[in-house]
Amino acid sequence: MAGSNLLLPGKSALITGASAGIGAAAARVFCREGASVTLAARREPELAALTKELRAAGHQAQYVVADVTRPDDVARAVSAAVTAYGRLDAAFNNAGTGAEPKPLHLLDEDVYDHVMDTNVRGVWHCMRHEIRAMLACGHGGTIVNNSSTAGLVATPVTAAYIASKHAVLGLTKAAAAEYAAQNIRVNAIAPGSTRSEMIDAWLQQNPAMEEVLLQSAPLPRIAAPEEIAEAAAWLCSDRASFVVGATLSVDGGWTTR
Image (tube, rainbow, N blue to C red; front, side):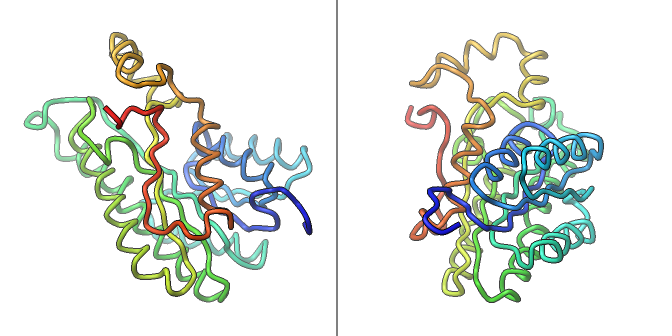
């Protein structure tokens, strides 16, 4: 779209964890900004409904049922984006999971494994296949990994989640340094408290924590998913062309304290 003020005109973008929350918000924001999107998540009914909504609004959208812990699923999602839209320009690796907060010494090994497999190995799988596709297309691309304020400091969540989100930042920096010269920019966002299924469930189990969260940030509210998606869209756009290996905190100032 020549002369367009859109952030992502003509871009082919893959969004994981797109069935709800930040991922679904990103699907709407990326489409609004001109991208053709491939949505990936485990829950087909939610993906199908969102894709139908986006197409009805005149956008290019498709979905792939995929679990990021399975490399073959990720490969199918990336291949679908390239097949449908000719290339992969941008990826928002948003899929993730949490766990019920427990003291570290009481945390079950299977819970730790599940969190690490989804949040770390899932990002690893996604980047490997996305980078391969971007290198093959020869035009470079952009990748944004979704970490958390828990990737920067210890927050009142489970140790496994904190460890996993720190690891996402390590993978981001490693990939950024390795592929910047090939015009692939890799960055991360670190959202603070955001309205989503995961945090709503956590707050239901720990109702006193919402007031704690509100009092601990200069901007005393919980973010809407769209506010996080806007940051991801900007980092995926050409307007962030000199941003490489960065972690953008989108947390209402929480990590300034």
